Amino acid sequence: MTGWAGGQRRKVVAGLVVLISLAYLGVLAWQLRTPYYLTVREVFRQPTQWAGQRLRVRGRVDLQSVAETPAGWRFDLTENALRLPVVYRGKPPANWRKGWPVVVEGRWQGQVGGEGWLAADRLLVQCPSRYTPEGGS
Image 1: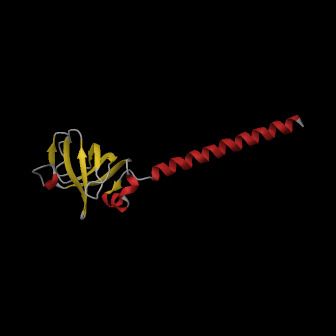
Image 2 (image 1 turned 180 degrees about the vertical axis):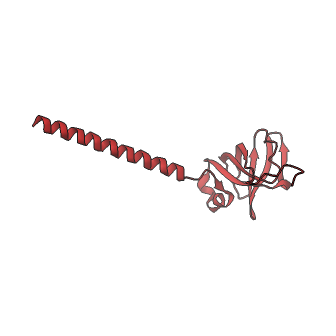
Image 3 (image 1 turned 30 degrees about the horizontal axis):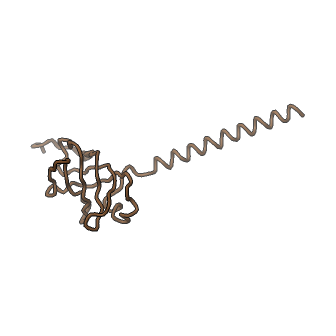
């Protein structure tokens, strides 16, 4: 009987190891499936849902809205007709004004004029898939 109990114990332990491994792989797959960023449209679908949360949002900087402030930079992130106000603390990358898509990361703030705004502390420029140097063709 002792040998049988030991064999059963090994099977149970092996089963638990397999189960835990599968659970870990499931969580890892779910995290990889989660998008790296939200779009401006996704933020505007339910702006109150994001209150106080850290977000990564992708869009294009409206070059007409860019203004330097004592706290950093203020600009609108756009997607089609939607405009998401952003206040960015820090020095932006040199190529951020070229009209390429950017991803800003920060905390979603309260309502300003009926809309929320993003207090950003990271700004990443996404280079186009086909890079053309300035003045080049």
